[in-house]
Image (cartoon, rainbow, N blue to C red; front, top):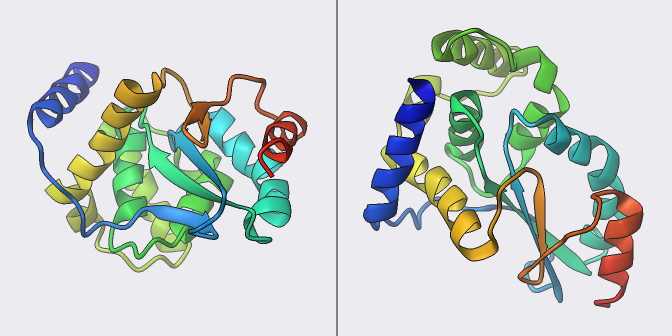
Length: 192
């Protein structure tokens, strides 16, 4: 039932053309960098959390902090818990990645529950315990943010044929190798 509802929501977002221009993307690095990376991720995906733990720190140090590249995080929720977490990460966001990073770093603390309501309660408790001052109900019920998140997923499928997470796009080309820092660095070095 939950999966069906999620697919119905995605369908209706594909036929609507609602703009969420006031919502800023979560981007790290030089906005004018020669290398543009897009990361399609689901906040409940353990492989995405591993990317943030094992690959992202070196990527940030060597390419983002030096101005050689930028990374743009796009939402590709795989379930209702990830969908709501994505909405929270974007809520009242000015492009900052603090909530997103915290959700990935502490994924096992909040990704639990046998129902959407239970998962939402765990997510809400986690955010409060981390000191994030957000209006949880407003964030997960904001239609503009909902459209923004779902349109990320739709765009990923249509434009880049995303079918799993994480999926990395470098300068509009899908990164097809095993996602580790060594392989990613090789691909990036060719573009410098």
